[in-house]
Length: 241
Image 1 (cartoon, rainbow, N blue to C red):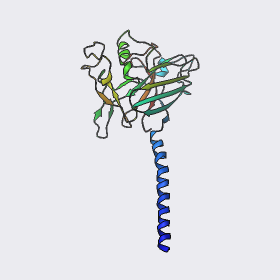
Image 2 (image 1 turned 90 degrees about the vertical axis):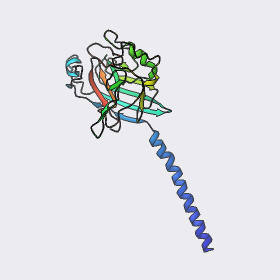
Image 3 (image 1 turned 60 degrees about the vertical axis):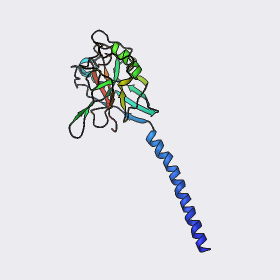
Image 4 (image 1 turned 135 degrees about the vertical axis):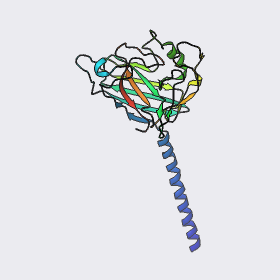
């Protein structure tokens, strides 16, 4: 009887352990696949972008130059090779056009640079699904800007905006699939790259300067397609931050 009781006790213990593991696995899986929820980091209002523009100088309005109360909140949900991105911006510059950019370039732990946009030779690409690349190209170049781009949005009279987009690639630990560019023609003169091509490029993670960046276009109120054009830096978010 002692042996039987011991066997029964061990069997019950094994069942309990297996039950706990069965409970833990779905919880861990849920955490892994759950949405990314984060606040963007605000850039300094006096910081000058590569185009020579800053929020303090070029977005001044009614005596306001810093918009220090401005915030942006990010939610990314990934599934089946797609990402749904939701951004809530509050208390930014009113009635202003903004665009969102996805970073490709960075520097690894050995100091080696990686990631270049094969369409522009730049370090970023618009946050847009690949089906919109022809539209982005059409808005690229002098005189072609527009305020109706997939990676763009307007704030309301209070400086608030809600932005949502579904893109056909994973942002976290993913790559931008340039190879899906519909009707790609490497000889198109609007393509800024010296040798335009289409192939997947990894999206910058913690080793990049940022993963997503939000910029404004206070000077001309339009986006510039595949290139960011005149812009002012507002917010950055980096994977893992």
